[in-house]
Image (cartoon, rainbow, N blue to C red; front, side):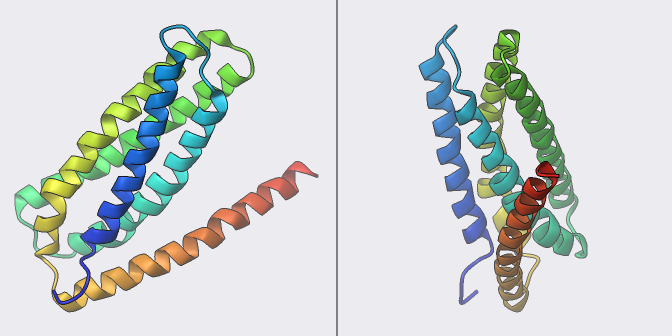
Length: 183
């Protein structure tokens, strides 16, 4: 392919996700075995995971790459790998939801929720590098071989369109939730 590969932007997003995981790991290290966890850091981390890692990054994978890949005559290994990655995305969403709820309880003064906050944060920190490695080192290169250069260029354009639309959706939802809160 003469231009950029669709793997490039996805792998760049992985590096940003890894940086957030490092922030969360530092927060857990600072809290130690029994110190307070900064619920605002955890809240920012879960917002990042929901918005950036899941809606933006996984959205491009699921709504664009995987959907287009599913229309191809796939080798059984690639089809199984894609199904595994989709299951990973679902698992990540479930862990994030669990963490959001535990952190909400902890921030409201339920100190017994601390252990769930720590355990679920650590589970996310452990989960994402394995998932990212599956995609970066194994899936992207093999899956992109199913596409022509023209299809790859079109996919990159769709990624850009997806990103542009997402920012509007995120902030429209924010305005709507604030409007509802004032009713």
